[in-house]
Image (cartoon, rainbow, N blue to C red; front, side, top):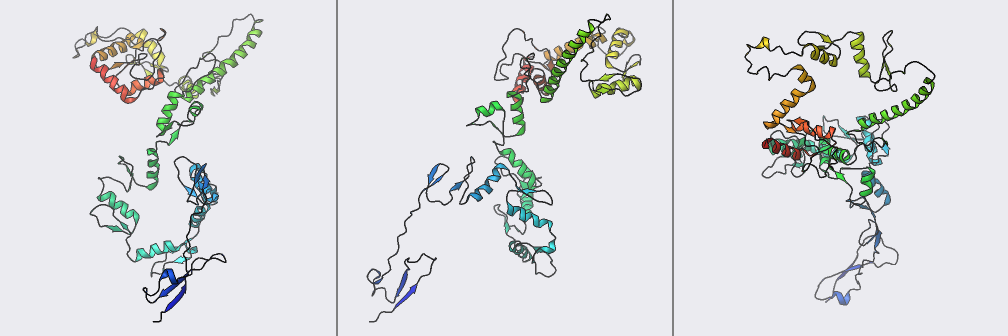
Length: 477
């Protein structure tokens, strides 16, 4: 019986000359011809002979992407160094490709080219929609196809919620649907998908800015002391407020002048104003040395030194005949209003006399109205006796405030400032050298006490810790 054999050559990828070409023999009957006996084709056994490559100091096999990103937490790898360089710009923030029209910058040249097309007129787009009545044009066939599918009624955006079969032609329609029907009332289209976060936003830009707040490594301290200790574990902070609180607590603005002994300040603005005083005092000392040497020959009385010194009086009154100068614009403005314009804002409630400065009103009240007019009010409905009413002297000296404050403390309505006994409020202890006196200020609001501790004593206390301490003090009264 004759056997029909057909021979076909299998065409594959182009190989180097002399390589084996496989031949496939088609046999009419599988039982008559044995592949092992009659086939001259021996399949080539492919062995993985790829040598391991060195990637970031480690030998790696089975990959052609030998150029791997070296940034912590990034596992991207590429076959060419140019592609790795493009990727690394996303870490460094470098945007070398800038649009000449609007000055927008991009990581890649292809992104710039795509953006440049937005400045060209629509008529320059090569691909036009062939639907009657639609004159839209596009740059790429992909955008044209998506637009034509929209004409044909395609709805590729399906609702991902269970038991919902709605579909939409635009992504923003799907987002609006999820926000309206599958979210709590008032939810906006762009919803944060972070675990435990229920915030939503009107625009994608606001959502991207919000997502950065969930990154625990968003901010780090660049102070020299922190950098020296953070080679392996840097100090990271989730938000800007936490970083600033760390800087104020761990690295407060400090004056390094010899006479200040490391005095700290609550803000850089206060430190700059303080350093300016040092400069003015040093300059005045130099000037005074020259003046004193010249004044030894003068028999007249020494000139009285003005409060604040003579240096830095850059604000001069511009009224005719006035030679006064001041160290701030505010002081000059008050001088103009009171001296030259006759402004009197401080009026005595008893005799209607007006004064230009508050301290003049206080002096007038203490001298002229120190006696209480309680005799004229004897028939009033007030139950307060004459002895209990504070006079003006007590108001000025602060005795009234002290009496009322102690009464609030005894009633559990206020608490005394805990400084310097801060045990349980902060993690460090202030050494009691005997020179530190207890603070006598009394507060009824947590906000005021926190600000007082930070501004007056330079102590930062957590809000919740201070609230618990204040509640214990009030309840114990």
